[in-house]
Image (cartoon, rainbow, N blue to C red; front, top):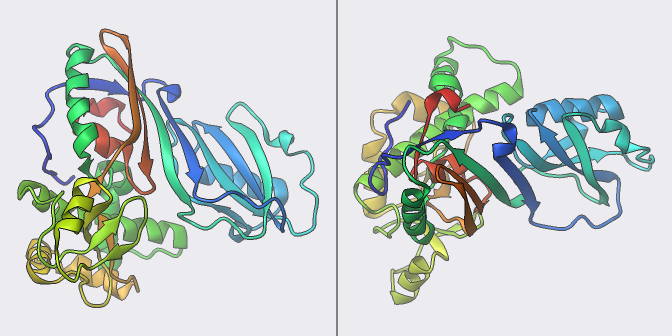
Length: 343
């Protein structure tokens, strides 16, 4: 696995994580409201101990539809209790009694018609409820770290979930690029491509963290608008933009590698090229796979952050993160999650 730099001092506090599924809860929030009519049925599904693909397959079986007609916006953890949206292309057919889908591991919380299918990345944010148990020091020491991190944010690293067990997805991507591995399944192939892209992004971000520029502008950078995937290149850096950066309305960005010219310029482009100069095979593989250059914010800001001390060594955190941001990347600046309990 990559050794990634910490924005603050490396945590000395350790904690147990996901001891029970209920210790990690996520609720997906769409960036629009279903309109109430149309051929697509939207379902808000609560799952417990299942992957997003497990639920998708269950819906495919129940509605007797192919995978292309059962969509979801974002991937959610298996070892957790999560709520997320799915859409099913029903046309003019009645939904029937969807309560028959309910089981020990699946609960249908809400249904609503919509004119368009659910697209990937259609949600705006995720709301988290996380219980950290067996803290190696008093809960108060965690709260002190939390207050600083909540004000300044954290590096927007892709979490370990993106890379698979022991980072194997990155190795599989390199095998795919070299021709040693043949992958026909489009979904599995996309997992390997995403892991390679995330690896390169994290490498650039880690260098920016070491340089203490992960939350500041450097010449030639593109700025991402908070809470969106949109970015822009400042014509000139001025006080107005500096104030927006300080207010966390915009964030500096890093590369999501693909074909075409690098979108950054000047000092920023030089840094990114230097950091990734040794990753020719991975860069070329992503370009050959047809991916295009894009940008991702280097900084992630928790919203609506609150905490509750349940006992001396147990703390519950509640907060929201923009889509694509990882709760584990937020937690790593606070505590070291015990490896045997991470999955």
